[in-house]
Image 1 (cartoon, rainbow, N blue to C red):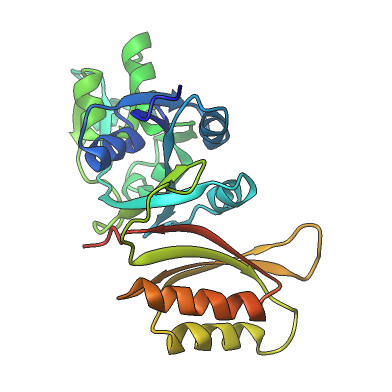
Image 2 (cartoon, rainbow, N blue to C red):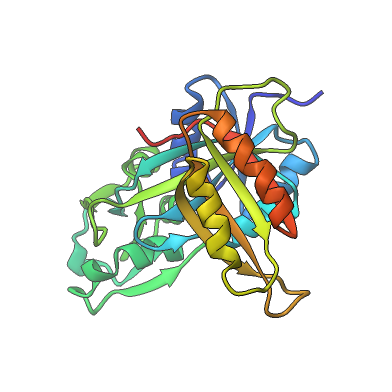
Length: 276
């Protein structure tokens, strides 16, 4: 029997996914650490984990497009979301200053978000890794001097590293949206005021504009739209949208109309808006 408290994350203890999982569920959960998002999805599909936490977009770097595809292709359901203010810190073994650091390792997204900070230190080589917290853990485990990691302050505490600089991201308002995914739709009807949809339209002029007008007429507020090419059909695109609304009846009306207009409509999830 699957453990409903077992939650899969990408990364290790101290990663932003770990922090978000513990903040979102606010209870004793059993974290299952995965090296990649593919491994995370596989863990859910094989019922090794009940739910997973996946980053889906960042206010600086934009959408994490491969994760949209993973959710769609594996028929996962989005059941919640969490907005987290990312604060990147520069971590290293005690007794060093930034002038003594020659390499900084971290996830490519973190390196991108801190690019301006490192322009002031041309002697530092930036090296991509799979995870922010794992980069910090490696420094601790292997006692690596002259190397630093971009990670959270939680990772600094976990791996006994000093914080050389705090909040080194280029833009202070650095928010990542995480979604909570699972294999099946929730068994109980829950109150929801946000939904994620995928639809495919006929390749005709004005077809997308018509769909957007329907959403507006049904009192849906479009908060996100992302297109992905359909590999099997060059020239056609899937559209992924997030919408919010005051009443679930507004969404149900729009969904019924879209199912008539579009070549394909798929509900990826119905849940409570995580933005306060």
